[in-house]
Image (cartoon, rainbow, N blue to C red; front, side):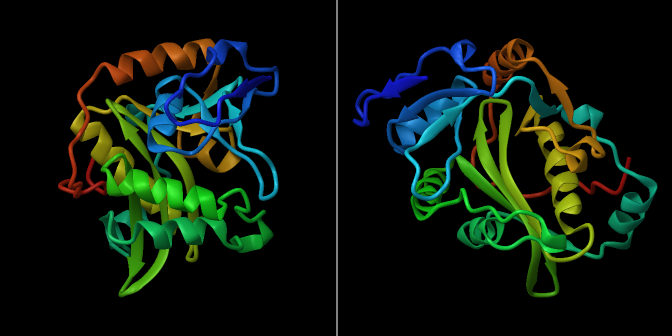
Length: 235
């Protein structure tokens, strides 16, 4: 484990290949925009609980969703066609982050790692056009969504939440289909989960992930503002 400088002017990281077997690479540093972007470019992300120092990770294996391999079940496709939810980009970024940090449905673990400092840091990323939220609405009620960071042709999913059945899945399908249309080739899901696997996410080695990331970063990204111009229920 490496100790990082706490000064934003020195935002370098050791190679992600040097992370521990569990994925821990470094400690401390800061959550400046410059350091966060440097981390994502190198396959690294912050993940720590309140009261801990900032911990930086690059897990092996790594969960990824390749947009063209998205899986949509028959029941989810039916929900999409019914247009039960209205889905938007970047309408209430902070609200989405706070919802991701709150208690989860079905007694899942809460997102306690989304600290006040993390909220402030990613809100600044959003303000500068690097972070985006996806919102699922039922009438005027926010019932699901996700947020993440975009660089080049890669989208780094950070967290998602759902207050209604299929709300977060619908949000993920919308953003995946839209990113594919824009030429994005990689959605980083960080850690494997059964929920994401059912939607097509797969586990790959850290080395394979870093190779995919390098190719994705070489592609042009989509400048803000982001908006949906496709119907994910079709196709």
